[in-house]
Amino acid sequence: MNSKTMRIMMVEDNLGDAMLISEMLKETCSQRFLLQHNLQLSTAFECLSYKNFDLILLDLGLPDSLGLDTLRKVLDKFPGIPVVIMTGLDDEELGFEAVKMGAQDYLIKGQIDSNLLFRTIRYSIERKRTQEIIREKEERFRATFEQAAVGIAHLTLEGSWILINRKFCQMTGHSHPELLRLKLQDIMEKESIPLDLKSMSKSLPGQTGSYSVEKRLVNKISRQEIWTRLTFSLVNSESDKPAYLILVAEDISEMKNIEKSLQEA
Image (cartoon, rainbow, N blue to C red; front, side):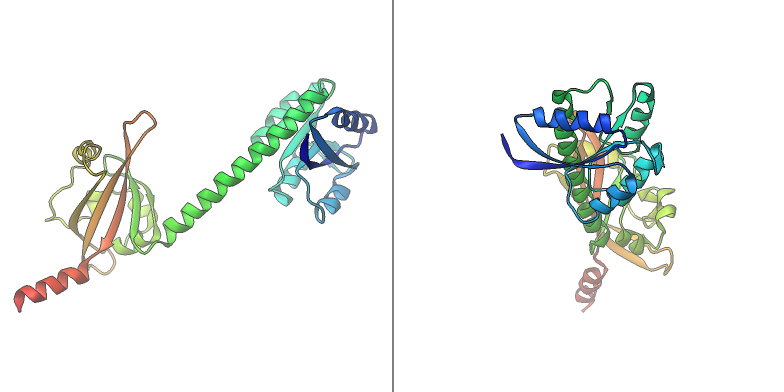
């Protein structure tokens, strides 16, 4: 038996259905459950606000809330708790819509047994945990991406922008929407040697995995020429084919000015 007790909030106004769910949970030998039953959404919210629950079993036809709006209220107020919808035989389409909105799964009343109930609860909790881990990783990536002290961008092999961070926009003087309408070559200094990204991407896998080049660009706002070191890294798809490029842009203007001063001295 799993030593951790799963805390389940059931919001169901039909006492017969609630009793059946309660009995099914008691039949599950491999897991202990603590079931909290509420007849209305308002009283469930009160309980959820000061107690921790692993999952919510939610009926969409409650005395104080009806339909998908019930699910929307729950997801808005308690986004971190997985929700499983309980629906009638004639409301299966509603179950599909609920999953699209963010419910983890749905159960059709009259077709539930203890094994199905347990599997649905367990998988819904595990799926929600996985989603939260992915969301947290994406948030950390986004924070690192946006706050980096160097320009970072993702490019197609043709030079169109996929992702662009704030620092890169500052370096170029272009807004994010403006850059999305341009290609990398469009912001390079006109005398700069063109970059052949497709040829570069073909050579990267057999070399070190990255390629660096020094290029000049002109800041759109200040009209100042900026020397940059552009480092390209290739990202392959699952089929091991070139998918896109990661570009790291460093402002090396100060270093270039020092080199020029030493040469003129």
